[in-house]
Image (cartoon, rainbow, N blue to C red; front, side, top):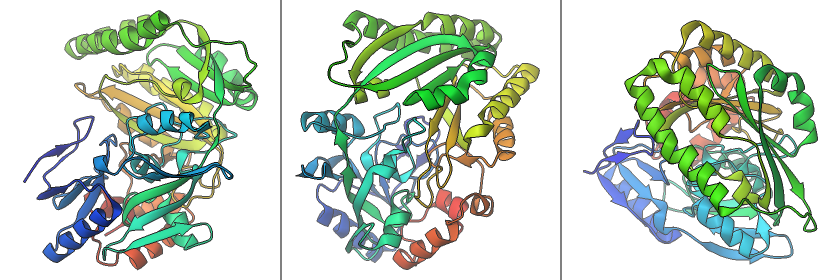
Length: 433
C-alpha cells in the first residue's frame, strides 16, 4: 500500500495498487485486473484538485506516461492528445503547430483529462471553459473496452464525459478543436473595489478576458484586461527582469515569506494584504496567449470556487466584503473573479448560463476562520454552482437542483459503470451512491 497526497496536501488516500500505463491498451488491462480483484479504479493526473475526486483505496492509474499529441488535422485545426499530457507541455506543443486552445485557466500544471473532467474554465464572457474545446474523446470503460464518442458518435456519452468527474471511465485520448495561435495584449492595474464593481458589466463586454484579484480586508483590486491582437500589434513581452521580479520574487518567494509570517501572527494580515496590493503594480505587455493566461503558483493554498449568474457578482462580492469586515477572517490570498460564456455541457458550471466565478483561497498552513462556510452560504442565495475540483460541501440532492441534466448524467453513468468501478467517497456524495 502506498500513500497519495494531492498538491495542496489536504487530501490523502492509500491505494493498494498503482499503475502507470503508457498506452490506452495498458489502461484497459489495468482496469481488467482491478475488476478481477474487485477493487475500485481512479485515474489521477497532477493532483491539483482540492477535493478527493481522484482519491481511492483501490487502483490508482497515474497517467504521467500517457502523453503527447498523436494526430493533427490541419484542415480542421484539430489535434488528438493523450489524456495525461500536462497543459504546460501541451500549450507550447500547440504553439509549434501554429495552434492554441481558445481559452485557458491561470494554472497549467493539470493534465488535460483532469482539467476537462473537473471543468477548468479560464475567463472571457465570449468564450467557454477548456471542455468546450473538446470535439471527441476516448473512454476506457469498466469492462476494459474502449469507447469513442463525439457529437455524432455516442452523443449522450459525449455530453456527459466532457465534464465527467472520472465517474464514467478513464479518459485515454482527447480530440481538441483548436484555433490559430494568437497573442494577447495584457493591461494590469490597481483599482478600488466599488469603482470596479460599478463598471464591471461594461468591462466584461469590452474586453476579451477579464480577471480580477481582490485583496481581502482591503478595497484594493488588481484588474487584468487581456485582449486579442493581430500580428501587426507593436506590443512586446515583459522584459525578463520584470517577469522575474513580479512573478517569481514578489508573487512566489516573497509571498511565501509573508504567508508564513501571517500564519504566525494572523493580526498582521490586513496590513500585509494592503502592501501586497500595491507591490503588484501596473504593467502592460503583449505575448503568446498561453504565456499571458498562465501564472506560476508555487505557494500552496486551499480553494473554494463557485459560479454564480453573471449579474449577481456585485451582490456576492459586497456580501463577502461585509462578512469579512465583521469577522476579520485573516485570508492572505486575494479572491479571484472571472467570467465565462454559457455552454451546453451537462455538468459544466456554465451549462446554459453566463457566469461570474468567485474563488476564495487560504494559505495551506492557516485556518480559514469560517470564511469558506460563509462564502458558501452567500453564493447559495445566488444559485452558486461549485467548481468540481475545489472545496465545497454540496451533495447530490442540492446539485440536482442546480443542473437541469443531472439525472441524464446519472443515466449515462449507470449505463457505462453499473457496478461503480470508478466510484469513490467524493462521487458518492456529489452523484449519489
